[in-house]
Image (cartoon, rainbow over all chains, first blue to last red):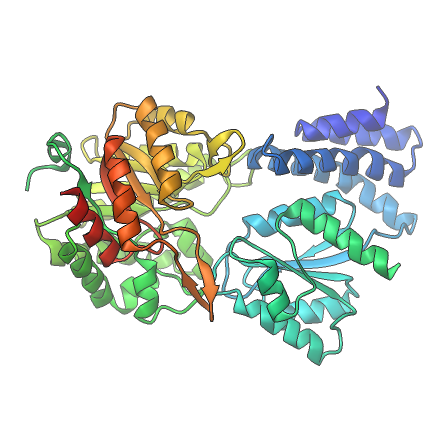
Length: 213
Length: 292
């Protein structure tokens, strides 16, 4: 089995140590960091994402796989920066103000990182102001908003309104997700898309970025 | 009033209370605020809620301490008030019910993910539950209700924490399941059978499920529990999945609907029936009426 396939397999099994070792091996062997990322780490994470979506895996498996992914990613990151490799896209994510539920948001961040995007995670209880100013500074492509509480959903609308005010609306895509949300609600507040799970967020972000590039 | 474990041996269903948060919001709790801060600000609201459920016929009344563990309170920088928050809630319910109902001390999840999946050690979570449950040394409680758990390991830590104070305090432990192609599972992947086995081995006296996806799914979950346990079963269903209307969560299941379905729960041998999110004293009164 080739090295990249092994990285993918070990990642799927949540073996952080061996993913780190294999990634180091791949770097030593002179494989291109971009290939290690795409065909090793991202390939493995996308299998995990699909299996989670089909309920063949549960949250603990995904969290372990994510730890394994980060173990590999940490080794690749300096090389990617050195090589000036362009990221697949930049996304700012967070749970909106008033909401402290971040398991769903973390899962989406894992899936987006696992798809090769650069993710800036602002954590939970994030104000509209913060989302927009970070998106501006970082020249983000997409803002991802999460909410679990029905009571905090209206905060999502403030983010959209502020994006309009700052003339970012349409330039930075805004996606929303969380248990109480729906496409109807996304339309109502003027968000660009509702994503029903982490993999759907990956698909949606890919679609948006293809349109831009 | 006879001890709860004796009461469980008598025939008939025991009715427990319904949602707390729904009424807290009507009494001034702001979205995003810590629900337990009401214990410090307006303990009279806790008494009012206990009175409503007692009036509706509930025989078990819960305390407003679901998020009362220091780990959870720390998210609101209120962990320094752990003792006051938990004892005040117990005192408020006791003031109202005296010995007319059982006071059930609610313990929800820590909000942390345990190692190796997350970054929080078992010891930290255990200590957090212990600090919350320490309230039982100050204010007597009739049972502990460890609820809405999705990680069996965390539920077991909470049971062990309770046992470290008392071998005789009745412990109720419930988990929250979602329908998946492989049957009902918690977010962490625990099946009803695994939950029944694990909670029983840890020493729970009453086991079952709360919250969830509406009472019809709960009937199926209860059937599954009944196949895997000989312990008394508790079911506290929410009133279905809410929709949002003008910023307010609207729960679809009416008191009449839930009362009708609660007959099916009783039919599977469920011993304690109450409500979770979206249920009101009207729901509890309707269930009480139909099950008597």
